[in-house]
Length: 352
Ligand SMILES: NC(=O)c1ccc[n+]([C@@H]2O[C@H](COP(=O)([O-])OP(=O)(O)OC[C@H]3O[C@@H](n4cnc5c(N)ncnc54)[C@H](O)[C@@H]3O)[C@@H](O)[C@H]2O)c1
Ligand SMILES: CC(C)[C@H](C(=O)O)[C@@H](O)C(=O)O
Ligand SMILES: [Mg+2]
Image (cartoon, rainbow, N blue to C red):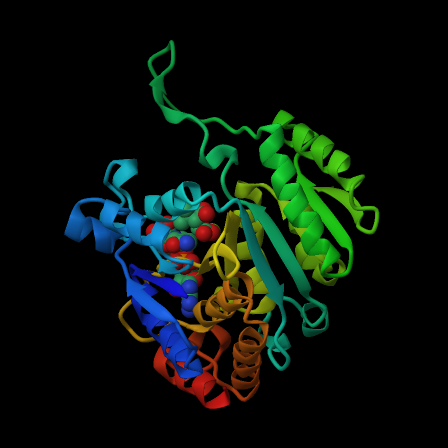
């Protein structure tokens, strides 16, 4: 059970330390943790956000725990050297095309949601975000128009096979939940989305036990705050999924609570190879202050145990400890409390 530990930048190392403490406390036989550099931390040492050493480590491990990347000092670098390329490169290089982003309200935290507690209390949804295509990975650049203006462009596209494989992942996810799948697109305007919708309908024929509905992304953004409890499994493209998942986090209460699993087709001796990371970023505004909420990172470690190592009981044990610590008031500033990163980690460890 080889796990790459990739803390990254900003609050990444602070929250990773807490997730590692929780993992070590489980004392899992055969667990090996291997440290690697990503993001600005790697660029400073190796001149690249995803250096060959780290890529080799990623390939050699069964699962990856990823903190966050991003550093305002790097915003002026050429795009291929920016820290964010580490997370994009990891996802593409390892073929991690299915990003699961669960959002569920924790008992006792309903009042911390940006929504009314009775609306927030009903949230239990899963966003299945496509992660290897869309406008993220299309041709992009800067050019000059005929009248001499600068013009930036990013091509949005999805091939049939890219949509088909995320559709299967989403239908299977919905089967394991309530059997309701909502595909979010912009098919009223975008050809990319029309293909997305057509393929979703084709694949639906193979899953008669799942009910498929379609929703335009603008409506989905609205419904997510109007009645989030009506959603169960959502499947959507890379860009829409990025935006809707940050939005879902505040419906739950804080972006510091939402974990994710990024899965591909590769199988290891233990299960599906994957990368596990919070949905949030490096939070430069609070980095180094011990204020970051480590819960999303700790829950990402739980998702890793479930999806990459088949350790369902251990994953559930971490999740129960987190829920219990939060319910008992282990809250940081993001949730109206006063606890710091390490104190929240202590509370989770005590509840294990
Ligand atoms: N997967 C990733 O590594 C990832 C994801 C998103 C953004 N980023 C990068 O992170 C940098 C900062 O981006 P941003 O500010 O737009 O988004 P962000 O998610 O880093 O922060 C947004 C806001 O949420 C707060 N926040 C985030 N995580 C928190 C936590 N665990 N506990 C408490 N508060 C938390 C931050 O303090 C900030 O106010 C950028 O360089 C961006 O590209 C990286
Ligand atoms: C940092 C960035 C490239 C990344 C994304 O857009 O996918 C982040 O926002 C996320 O949600 O993981
Ligand atoms: Mg994002």
